[in-house]
Amino acid sequence: MKTQNTPIRTRIKICGLTREEDVDAAVAAGVDAIGFVMYEASPRHVSAERAAELARRLPPFVTPVLLFVNASATKIIAACAHLPSALLQFHGDETPETCLLAGRPFIRAARIPLDEQVSARTARFDLVKYAEDFKAAQAILLDAHVEGYGGGGKTFNWSLLPPSVNAHLVLSGGLTPANVTDGILQVRPRCKTLAVDVSSGVEISRGIKSADKINQFVAAVRAADEQLAKNHVRLSPT
Image: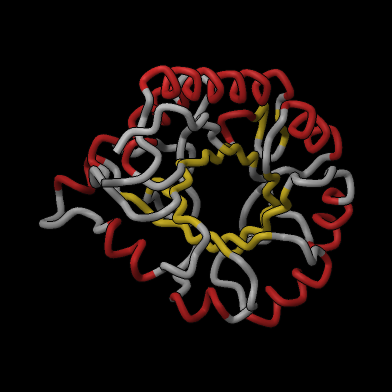
């Protein structure tokens, strides 16, 4: 099913922000969400108090997102008290039931194997089943499966994703201003809607963002949207 008249707009999240100037640069570039990492082992970690301080710079309709990895319900609820409007993002081994404990809207990360991992396994990652298991999530975030948690700046093979996933997806893992257009063009037709999430691809160093790279990334996303609009891409899986 193709839609001729509905404009396409890919939502954009910049993750791992730690400084006021980076929050301001992301907002000025027109992003939709800002991510704060609650995982202590990450070099981009900030406390809930610091995240709340940075989030106070956000204008209406720019969403703060709190990223957790195997955190306790007590810790999650305590962090949410500092940012009552935040969306939650789970990147660890959380079950569907665990994700619901805080009673907040959430995004669930799926760790997609890299090419060498796929070739060594008898079965590929079942994204369709994963999306069904986590159907309470607002979206499934696609990240590369590397040692530890997070994509590590690695890009998985987008062409290996299922042709149709009945879910809102967020493409992540190794995105940069140079490759995000191609990623959107490949993944957007496979899902209900697509957003993108970038961290290291717009950084000068870990946790330190570049305003120029953020602007280049946003421009590349909009270029993909324009191309999809010209191609009249479908807006929901068949």
